[in-house]
Length: 325
Ligand code: NAD
Ligand code: UDP
Image (tube, rainbow, N blue to C red; front, side):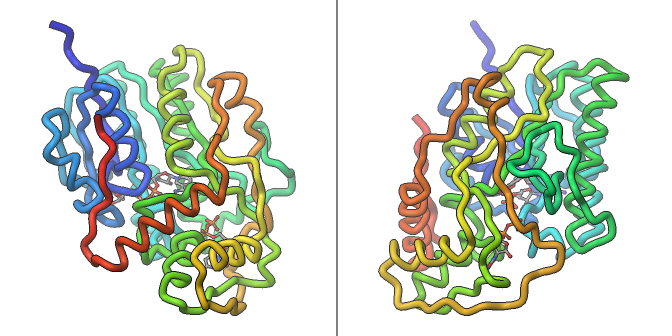
């Protein structure tokens, strides 16, 4: 009998991780989710917990882990500025020690490992849109550095493990992603705007709101991650995964107010230190190498996100229904 592919997802109880676990289960994989529930939650994986091919382990990946798997997706790391600046030393630890532990596991097992890297490796970019050959403009001592430099060091480790030990690596540079199961208090712009709009509270736009981001819907992103994992051994990345359509934060606030029919007003607050002025991925590589193209328009994705938060805010411990087949 064919043995199922067994996949490890670190950070599997988080926003991205829980969607990835579901998608992998729907593709007939066995999934081991490893999470210390710092920013993730058991609610996120409540439905998957009863799936016969799903297993959850409470574990902090800054400590070694011994499991037997065929593939590793390394997603464990707080991703919102509020969360990763809460304990910046731990953020660097999970990015660097966590990567070393997971790379050590991949080395022992000789299995492919995918790193959830980030557009933050480009910092406040001088080049626009950002392509993978741009080395970035990161302040190494600012409040975002624990995350940006942690993720940059993780990329270094991935390439050195490949050069030194020959392990198959894949690096995805993920741009702002949004959708159901974002943490309601994570301070990220989409979750904050949607939650405030649904409560008719003011939407706080930092600075003049002319800074831009490009928002990718979660389902598109997960598709990109799985495509990257399934590429031949010589495809390492880094590969940008994100949506090309760029919007100012002020436009986003207006769109969320319109889509929710909210009575909220927009207020302006001080721009956080080192806040990138603009961000848009060049996804030419993802298109040619992965045949990947995000297809969900922003308004469609926002409507689904609003529906999720609306339900969540009505039932404080609400659980988002699964789509696992
Ligand atoms: P998230 O905070 O929802 O998920 C991160 C998960 O990692 C959580 O479940 C958390 O509990 C877990 N975790 C944190 N530290 C851990 C540790 N030491 N050991 C085990 N588990 C730990 O964030 P997310 O948005 O799902 O992001 C997932 C990954 O994708 C992160 O690595 C992040 O850097 C990357 N990423 C996300 C985005 C985005 O827009 N969401 C953009 C770029 C990169
Ligand atoms: N932002 C905002 N109001 C908020 C949260 C964020 O104006 O309540 C801005 C923030 O300053 C940044 C953009 O929205 O310019 C995206 O912020 P987020 O924290 O979501 O992601 P990142 O800065 O990491 O891209």
